[in-house]
Image 1 (cartoon, rainbow, N blue to C red):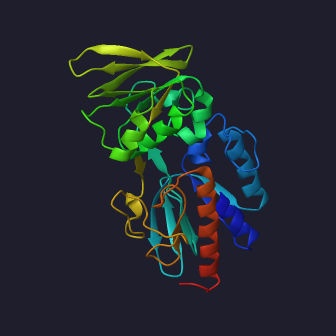
Image 2 (image 1 turned 90 degrees about the vertical axis):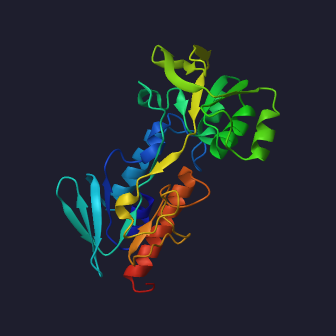
Length: 292
C-alpha cells in the first residue's frame, strides 16, 4: 500500500492485488503502539486508514490471488487464480511471510487474542503477567529476553532436548530469575475460557500431559516466505527470502520486492512501509529510464 501511495504521488498508476485482507500481518494485532504518529491504534484501523489513503490517491485495488508473473521485457503480466491478467511496466512483489504455527485446534482463532508472535509489538500487553514461549532458536531467545523484562514469568517450551540458539543469548536469558526452561516437551493443546487463552497443554518426554497456566503464548518456530512461484524472476536466499538490497531490486529489470518477504534484519510495520517507498521509487526510476 505504501508503494501504491508513492507511485500515485509521482504520476504513475498503481494496482494493488491482495489475496486476503489489506494490511497483512498487522491486522492480527488488536492494539499497536509502535507506529509513528499513533499513540495507540488497532492493526485493522491502521490498515483501513492506509487503504483510504491509497484510494484517495487514485490507485486501483483487486481482491484475487496472484499465481504467476511473466517478464515480457518492456512489460510484465500478472496472472491470477480467477483467470485475470494485468499488465504493467513494473511489478513489486510484496508477498509477505506467514508465521509457522504449532498446528493445534483453535490456534488461528486465538491469534491476537492470547497467541502472539512479536514481543516488540505485543509484549507490553503482558506486563506483570505469565507467558509461555514456544521455540528454542535465536528468534525465540531474543523475543523471550524482551518478554523477561516485562513479564512476571517466562516459560520456555522447546520440543528438542536442547535450545538451538546462540550460547550467549542462552546465558543472558537463563540467568534471569523469572525465566524457566523446559526441553524435550511438545505443546499439544490450548486451554481457553470465554474465548481467551488461559494455558497450554504440554506433553512431556515420558508421555505425561500437564497444563501450564499462562496469560499468553508467544510462538517463534520460524517464518515461511511464499516466494517459490517467483524464483525465476528474483533470486532467493537459503531461507527462501528474496535476495535484494535496500533499493529492493531483483535480477529481473522492472521487478522489485518489498516487506517481510525480502532478506532483511528487521521485520516491523515501519520497515515494511520503508521498503514500499524504496521499491516504488526504484520502479519509478526504471519507468522513467533512469535505471536498468
